[in-house]
Length: 328
Image (cartoon, rainbow, N blue to C red):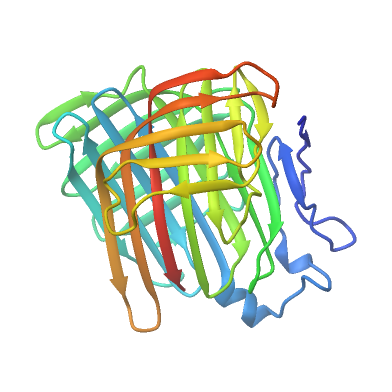
């Protein structure tokens, strides 16, 4: 399916959201302009407005992920470096911030985001058209990365049960350079790939999802099952952005490091995921809680551009799956 061009404003002049999947970047997510039946009061929006900026960096030796999360009434950040040869997380940061003080998530995917707490800092900066810089400084490790490219962005906008409207921007593979520093060791990121997930919406207090994402120069995909339905399911194939159907995640929740099998109901994707390790974290803050695991590993199988198109083989494409539930 060919996707329409993304609107500059997610909410139209009539106060209605532009629902659907689009190609390109939105520059404004103005939820305060929503009208009935999507409109909510200012206090409700304050507690239900969730935004995050997640960046993944992948090389033959390491997989790194960095996230800044603003959940309205507070904020948090995490980052980790996963050594693919040692098959374990070798450096990590997880920090709850101070409301209104420590985190700033940009108003759209091309805006700057940052997190600062004492001597720790994360910054995602737009440095040019489709070009970005990521800086991380903390006790365990450092990252200085540059990434960018012209692969089409996905914009997905949809309704959320128990909330109102949510929107997300996803990239596919972006050219990566820079370095990862762990202790005294510098590891080059040059030649790897980056991808990002910018999400911004009015979500339910209880939100859960399963997610899969992996990206290479010719093939990439984003899949979700849960609070957002099939809205953000997409395949990037040879520079073309293709909408996918609903995703099915077959895995063992009690043993997430066992193999996963992921398919879409339109017959365009059938992949097996073999975890190499995982980053996990459970939190219970009394008024909020989360259960999170993100296995890192490789996907193999096939994808198709259309139902009658030939299958394209996917072999050991590095990426992640995720099983996440939040009360926030």
